[in-house]
Every structure is written in C-alpha cells, then in structure tokens.
Length: 458
Image (tube, rainbow, N blue to C red):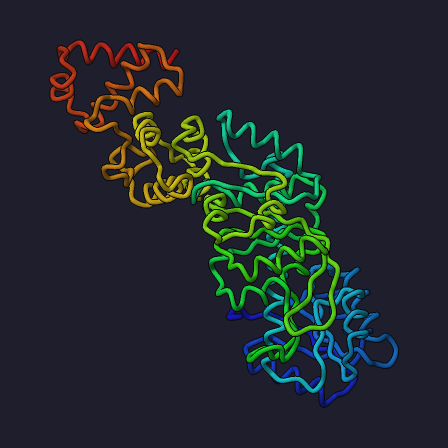
C-alpha cells in the first residue's frame, strides 16, 4: 500500500470520523471525512476516491443506501462498512447492497488496514479483467493466445466449442507452454467474461494457508485471523477460478475441493455456515496425473471431476510453426517505443532451430534480453542469448536448418539464400571467409547476393 491512495470516511459521529481519518492519514493515505451520505455523494460526483469507509447507521440515508448510490455512480469504488451491530444478517445485507466487506466497531487498526488492502487488490483484479476484456474485443476471440500450428488451431476450435459451457476444464502441458493464457482466453471468450477471472498458483502458498485463501475464514478462526476474510471462491462467484499447478495440492485439501465441486457451496475456515457459489473451475498442471494417481498422490475421484474437458498444449518444440508468430508478437510486446526493431531472417531461423525446453516462457526471455542487449534496429543471430541451445541430433548435421526450411515450405533457391545469409552472419559479413566455407568463388557470392536483392526489390 505504498501508493498514496485517497479514502473517503463517512460517519455522522464526529469523534469516530475524525479518529478514522487520522488513523488513515498516519498510514500515508490521503483521507477526508464527510458527516453523512449526501455530502459524501456530492464529493464523489466531483472527485474520484480509491475507497469509501462508511458507517451503516446514519440519520437520513443509511450506509446500505449509500452503497447502492455509490455502486450506481462509481461501480469500481470499493466500500467498507462499519457497524456497531455486527451480525450475520447485517453482513449479508451489506454484501447484497454491493459493499466489499464490513467491520464491526470497535475494530483494531490492522483489521481496517487489512480489509482496505484486500479491497485495493480486488479493485486491481477487476481493472485487469477489464483490460483483458478490451484486449479480447480488440484482437479477436483468442486475445493473447497465438499459434499457427494445427495443434493450436485444434485448441482454438475447442475453446469456441466449450467457452459458454460451465463444465470443469483441465489444461495440461509443460511449464511455459501458456496454460494460464489458455485459461484466460477460455474465460473471456465465454458468457462469464463480465464476471471475475481469479487465478491462484497452488504451489505459491503453503497448504496451511491455501485453504483459507480458497474458502475464506471467520474472525478468530486461527492465530492471526484478525478479521473475517472472503475466499477466492467467493471472489470468483459468477466467473472463473483458475487453479494452477493443481497436481501439487495436498490430499487433505483435495478432498475439500472435491466436496465443493459436488455441493457447489463453501464453508469458511472456522465458520458454521455454508455459502452457495457459482464458479467455473479451470485447473492446470505440468504433472502426469495418471502417475500421480497410481502413486497415491492425487485423488482419482477429483481427477474425474476436474477432467471433464481436457485441453493439452504440446511443447513448443513439437509445433515449430508457432515460433515465428510468437517471436514477432513478443518482439512487439517488449519493443516499447522502439517499434522499428525486427529480427533478421537468420535470427529467426536461429530461433526456429532451438529446442525451447522452457517453451514460450523461455522464448519470451530470449526476445526481451535480445532487445535490451542488441544495437540497431535489426536483431542478428549474434544478439540472441542462446549459447549452445540450438537443436541438434548430435554433431551438427544441418537438420535444424532443414527443419526450419520445411516448416516454412522454402524453395531450394530460398534455402540456398538462407544458408548463405547464415554463413555471412557467422563470419560477420566477411565475404572472403564466407566464400571459402561455402566452397564457391567470391565473385559468385557477390552475384548471388545481387540477384537476391533484385528479387527482393521486385
């Protein structure tokens, strides 16, 4: 919460209002107070705020009525309600009115700050979802999902078919193949695109905390649970919850996830009440779940619940047709103001000859580093930080170059030009040395170059 944010505090109790304004100011926020709903709405009509903290019981318009007005006026602004009459009923009523959360007076400073922090995180998520929806509308049905190979076209067709279906989807593939991109595309191409897309990596959070992250917890459920917290299932209600690396989830939590998938309701940690949720579950893993099930590490009944619609993403090395469009898209993504930057033909062939053990993520890393380290607009093979990673079948037998040529359907003449360009790149333009390697006369090399330039000009 280092960014200076503006918070509006609404309470008819002067002492309480001034206390909350002062507390927030001490934490680095720009905070202002208003004595009731009407002056608060006047402020919101003229100025944007990052969050509103309001009392529920106020003369005239109540805090619940204020929430409805704010939701209509500035729907992106989160509202946290304060009440001295905390109960399950008032919490449900507050959420129905559109409040982000509520806290009960008297509250501790950390309780208010943690609630506001979650409100800002939720707002950032909503704004990211809106940005992604605009990207999908602008670029077509598949957003950032790029591919020219038959395998990717099959994935595109499957996404079209199941985007509006609420069934669970299991995405498999090696690390770096773009499983989260597929999950996002699936969400934003379907009828749930106006609802949240909520991702979580199951390996990034200790299992003891993952249950609370998914299902939420009530205040006092465990040490450190200073405030009631909604889980990601509730955050994703009406939308999609993406569970990445589901193969790493522990067996205990797997059984609780299975129960949610069966009953479509969640119980927060330490809570006595269940809440119905409408969430599409999309999961992903780079593990072989068949082996995990045989080893007793993954529940077979959960697998069947998750694997209703399987989507497998082949590794990048098995779909060389995708390397060129991916490289060009990544170049445009990271070029920034230097829009004229481009890859030479030899550099592109160098990329197409690599095994890409890290898949698209590794390709992106190479492109980003090449942009940072290269001079001039044209990126050459020597600018690519590949080391000895070119694809090979042992000694260099030319198979990498041939694979790239076959993928591009080059003619023999084009393949010859490509080989000459590669040798010239390796010799840094030294035509005498290049001619010696090629086994041709230097004048023949000059004439070949002139004919190629003339053909290009035509």
